[in-house]
Length: 234
Ligand SMILES: NC(=O)c1ccc[n+]([C@@H]2O[C@H](COP(=O)([O-])OP(=O)(O)OC[C@H]3O[C@@H](n4cnc5c(N)ncnc54)[C@H](OP(=O)(O)O)[C@@H]3O)[C@@H](O)[C@H]2O)c1
Image 1 (tube, rainbow, N blue to C red):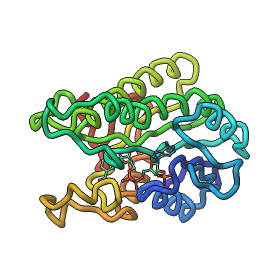
Image 2 (spheres, helix red, strand yellow; image 1 turned 90 degrees about the horizontal axis):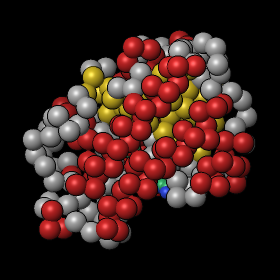
Image 3 (cartoon, rainbow, N blue to C red; image 1 turned 90 degrees about the vertical axis):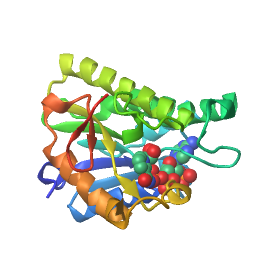
Image 4 (cartoon, rainbow, N blue to C red; image 1 turned 45 degrees about the vertical axis):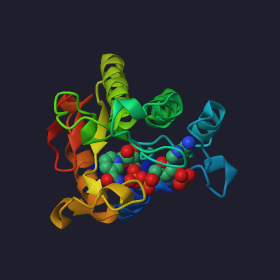
């Protein structure tokens, strides 16, 4: 599986996260040469904080080889002083700002510094973990304002990147990826109502996502694809 990645250099950003770690492991299993970046990386050359553009620029410079695939597996839904809003009355600028910084601005800055590393010839991909709840067309439940809005912003940025790259680098693909509902710290407080058949382990989700990465087409560049390869409406 992941034929185009066998022996290829790949980059996982957010490898300390549940899905990021599983993706890195799955890619190694598929024979890729994986370079992992995270906030807490022991080697400072592979340390990167989304809130610090300088650290992103330095990280890109330390990338050992031209990667065929860059996966951004970072994101935030809740944390100290931050939880998904049930009502507009819970909106506050700090939560909105934090969600945008981590979920949209961070990945955009990663694109700025890492996209030039992709090889100009042959299949290459920039993929960022998004979420089904970011679909504006599909939004029936409301709530989770900061998360939904910041991920919708990410999806627009990804579409823009795809349009721009298509002009000069027609073999490069930009994707948003929805991993399903996955047993990680991010989903832990919110998955009581999810049926066991719809809840994936991180390894399961990573295996599905690697299949999508393998099969996605240039025509799908700029789309958000779910774990089963279906397109999520914008
Ligand atoms: N789990 C789900 O059910 C689910 C569903 C839909 C979409 N997603 C998306 O999938 C992605 C991965 O989520 P996950 O479930 O694997 O969550 P997770 O286990 O909480 O991982 C989140 C990752 O983001 C990193 N991160 C957060 N802030 C950062 C910063 N300022 N700089 C650098 N890295 C930062 C974390 O790094 P640290 O380890 O340093 O904190 C960690 O590696 C997210 O974009 C999420 O929105 C997840």
